[in-house]
Amino acid sequence: MIPATAGTVSRRTPVRPAFVAQRDAAADALPLTVREAVAMGRRGRLGAFRRPSAEDRGAVEAAMERLGVPNLARRQSGELSGGQRRRVLVAQGLAQGADLLPLDEPAGALDRSAREAIARVLDEVTGEGVTVAQATHDLAAARRAGHCLLLDGGRVVAAGPPSEAVGEVGRGRAGRLPEG
Image 1 (tube, one colour):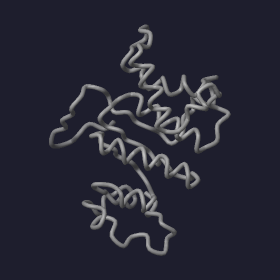
Image 2 (tube, one colour):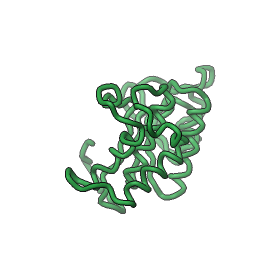
Image 3 (cartoon, helix red, strand yellow):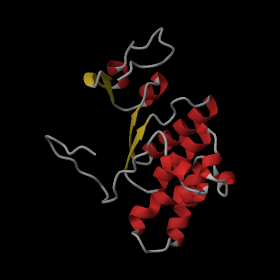
Image 4 (tube, helix red, strand yellow):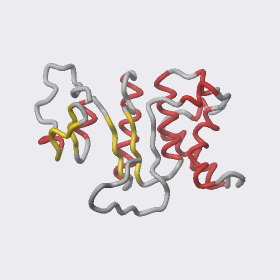
């Protein structure tokens, strides 16, 4: 990600942040099963030639269970619905075991049950000490955060607790924050 321009960044573990993108192009291009896609989250720990250990396999299974996708484990990633794919991507991030989990619109354009499943898991891992940083236009997600940065055109226009940073923004906008 972008190096800090001032201050310091301290982390509890040497594990790289587990960035979760909105979409995974590999799911469309490669014939990966859901289990293989989630297991890709462990590759940073394994290196190029080490085989997954029981701990690695356990982390993959636990992440799939947490996101409610173990029944999809043998399906091809490219066959999944948008909500299923997004839950698989979040599971991949969790399988990495990082203490920092940045996400890009993890529940954008998903149905209610998928949004709630992802929100529940993000709340759980935050409670376990993982720092979750997500870009979102969803006011409900922003209001659950511990700290918010409100951006407009890429500029920070407010920062602080959700009650201060988000405040009354979005009333009459169908629960969405401004684009940007």
